[in-house]
Length: 121
Image 1 (tube, rainbow, N blue to C red):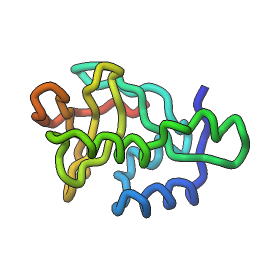
Image 2: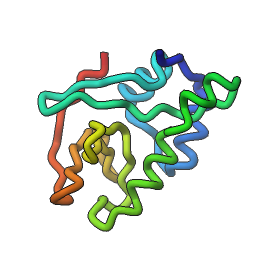
Image 3: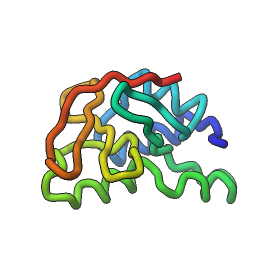
Image 4: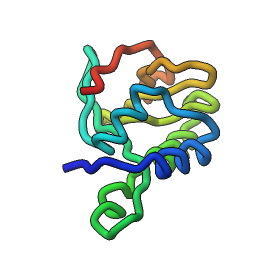
């Protein structure tokens, strides 16, 4: 079960990522920091924002958006400046790209991206 997260934690993640997250994503994280989201293509596990306010929240947010973005940026075909928002558990990621508020599907096998629409609820 995901927990809500504070605005301060979201701002800390945004500082580490070097950009503000889109309003829909921020709203979702504040209510439910993690969990699943859907697109027409797949179901996704949302990367939470790090929350070290207690041991349980710290453990449940260990795979936070900053850490997962740093890991993704190690892939040669990952878009420069991309942010890893969610994973389908098979290597593909939902990402943000620099200069865009839109979500994109990054295919880890081909290195290609395509625009997707996310159901945040």
